[in-house]
Length: 178
Length: 179
Figure 1 (tube, rainbow over the protein chains, first blue to last red):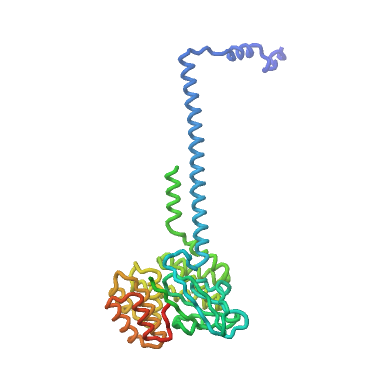
Figure 2 (cartoon, rainbow over the protein chains, first blue to last red):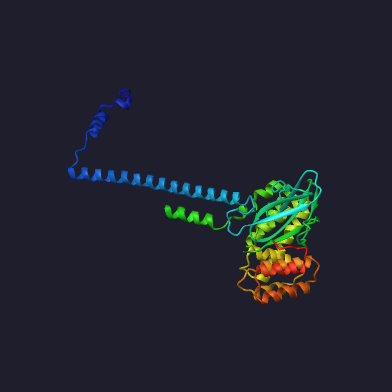
């Protein structure tokens, strides 16, 4: 009958017998078994080495990146202020004095404090004298005074700066090496 | 791997990149964006020429503090860069930042590149920042360029030290006390 040839192929008794034979364990000699085990162990060790190498690479990159970031921040932070560190052996204490009838405030601005009007206020003394002491390294600095936040005065006791690009009076101080 | 990390570290320590140079936080805080970009371009060029950057930054901050216009600030920074270039040509590649700043000021005061170069040759192993600064101060005080030059160059040839130059300035400019 044609119907007999249309048996379910998944339940063919002949095919099942072959499959059962194939499922039987293949007997291996001790020599083959040891060789297979050695190969498996070697492959496992290689995978462990690869993982270890990758971990070292990631750690090294993270270390280098961390150092670079810290150094970069150091550069940026170090550039924030031009005021010399007071521990420098070459630093000299320089007193700036201005006699003026200021109503409220006198500030010193210059190459040593980023021209920041709030960085170096002068203190009032008797007879309209205002003064401040600033630590300076050897070098040539341009500076001026701001009186009451609006009026600019150069230091009458110091040389005038010739290179005035912005049309306001500016003085210059030269601090020599010891 | 540690060799790779060491190499990366050395590269990071070598020189600040142009981007880092340009992105000075002081400029970002004090200049408008258009002016800042133009000033940063000058700084980047100066960095490539190995010129000192701090005098240029201070020039820009001075302009900001004095409420100068953006174009004025950019022009002043460009002029400062050109002055530093001329000073280095006269003083040599080994000139310090102080010497370049003083040399730039002396050139703007009227010294010729030859004059500045002669100060260097008179004191090849000494820091010539103070002699150059004193020359500029004497001219600013009213002396002619030639008279100031003769006074300073004579003292340089005699081997005067920094204090000798400051004393010279005090003698010739009574209203300019030394510090």
